[in-house]
Image 1 (cartoon, rainbow, N blue to C red):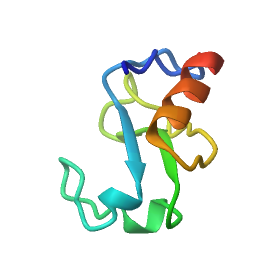
Image 2 (tube, rainbow, N blue to C red):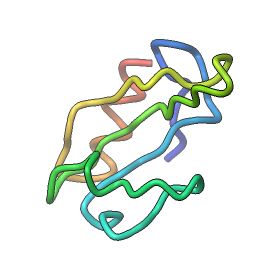
Image 3 (cartoon, helix red, strand yellow):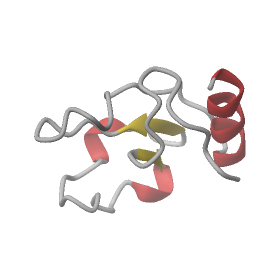
Image 4 (cartoon, rainbow, N blue to C red):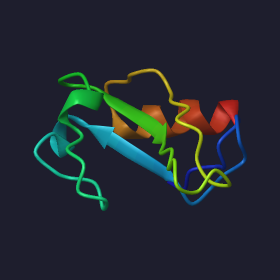
Length: 78
């Protein structure tokens, strides 16, 4: 499933799906995502980059039990 642009800032290139399967992973920028998630849940996050204010705002979805539901809820909001 494809994520729609962020409903807060309109960005579509800063979105990420994070969840329990990703807890040991790192983001592309090397930041550990473990602190951003709850176990057994998935969340969409519009990654904020303080060096580039044109992209990303830090907005996020709620937490959902499946990736599919997290994406659906994000897209319904966008």
